[in-house]
Image 1 (cartoon, rainbow, N blue to C red):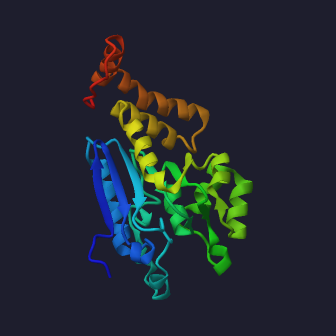
Image 2 (image 1 turned 180 degrees about the vertical axis):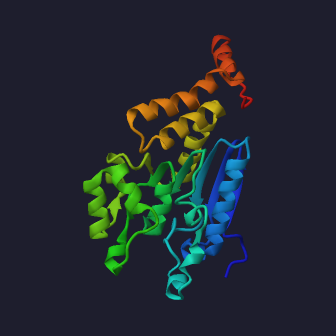
Image 3 (image 1 turned 60 degrees about the vertical axis):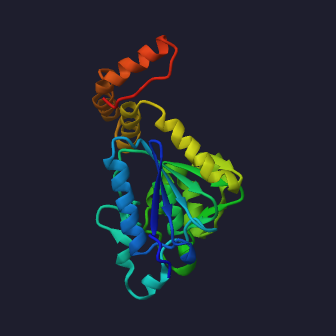
Amino acid sequence: MSDQPAILTERHGNVLVIRLNRPEARNAVNGAIATGLEAAIDTLEGDDALVCGVLAAAGPIFCAGADLKLVAAGRGGEMATERGGFAGLVRRRRTKPLVAAIHSDALAGGFEIALACDLLVAAAGARLGLPEVKRSLVALGGGLVELPRLVGEKLALELALTGDAIAVERLERAGLVSRVVPAADVEREALALAARIASNGPLAVRASYRIVRDTRDADTERTWEISMTLGLPVFASEDAREGATAFVEKRPPVWKGR
């Protein structure tokens, strides 16, 4: 058993890299992963200097899903937290975007962890899927909730009912995967994408993120209401004035988050 923390974090400017760190167990989710990931999200959410996160993984496997040794021992509850659900993440409400760096296959709970992220950068040739039905199980970590909305009912049903894995290239065409790059470039590309997000005005990023996320189930009128409520205060901010001034003066803006 490794004496290393199950979750590692490192700061790259205003981006927080969160790393699953149980490579000896294929990064399978146990209690340490769940509580550690929840704590890392707390850090991302609680630090105003951080604008965006990247979820990566150590070792050759992104995440094998649930730790079946815990399931077999009747200790599956250890893999979830009260606020975040499975892995401390899949039901966690966040105000800052999270980019997944998927450098290998992500199946079952590993796929559901990826689905809980906002943008997915995946390795060419990698596969994503929900194989639970092949073992007479049901994917309860968010896959069946998120996939119909993200890829449409037909493809969601194919994934859910066959249990077959699908290449990330097909899922990129379906709009689920943001980038497909060589495996060696996945983390670098995910970090670059997060850095591009984090270079923008933090108030505007957070408001834009919440408008998209908070209006998923809203009708058009409610969507407009939420958009105005969250967006108009940003226009009155010091950062908004700085953005316009920097444009006129042809220089990079200096954000203050206010």
